[in-house]
Length: 341
Image 1: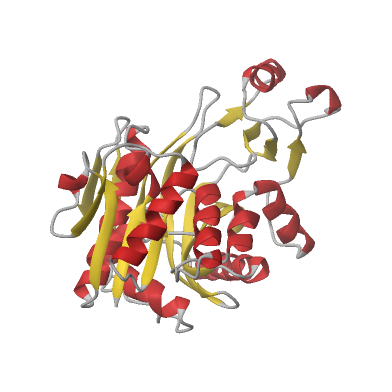
Image 2 (image 1 turned 120 degrees about the vertical axis):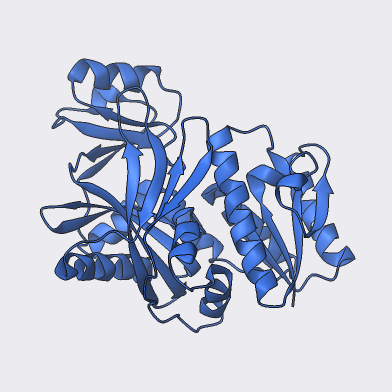
């Protein structure tokens, strides 16, 4: 089959912050190379200044950033000009939902989750409410609309404050005093905010594959996350995270139930969790490729692209044995490096 693969930031936002841009390019290479190894013809859409970073592919080069609607129109034209069978988009959640929705309305086939499922997970408050109805374990979570801190009667510090629609660790703060809390609320310009109980435990993630109705967890990973009152950051992962089997089993079951309850999530999915006193808590769901999947492919013989494609068509992968432990590190400047053992 003929695929068009693109990552939104590296194709249309090439001057974005280095860490997220580098992660995006790494995920673009992961998917493109995996599809190519399976014998598919792969086209990549990327900014012309960055194309040298993804060699050996048929590049559709974008010379300058476009308005979003213009980008979608360019995407449609590219699909028609090159007779693309499937588009495999990688993008922040909000943009990903709109890209796939546009493709569906223009009869363009995509590999990805249903737009409504992506919107449900992009909205952290909506995710919390859906999973809370199913009594899945999560930190206590509250919604603060329009920075209306006067509506807050009581908070149990410390708390995590983040944007309702944020990605990664952007606009994510750990606040341990009332003065820091109220100053952050007053000074941040990020619309609706999520206030979440701080779970002091092991930051981890579960990688799953889903066909939209049922899912299978394949890996539990350690996440390197720095939380602070001045902003937080994601600095990589270790695959796999070695814990007692009972903890891993609980984490897998929790993540699978979360993905199944959301519904419509397809392909490769990431669920961020925190493990405290042997209990996993759901933090958020990523309805797309994540950087930890790069390390998973290196640690096993699993082709992430092929497994994603199979899951999309209803065939979930078997759990693979780990050949080695892989550590993916992201520096403050966004440089990605790997160690294995």
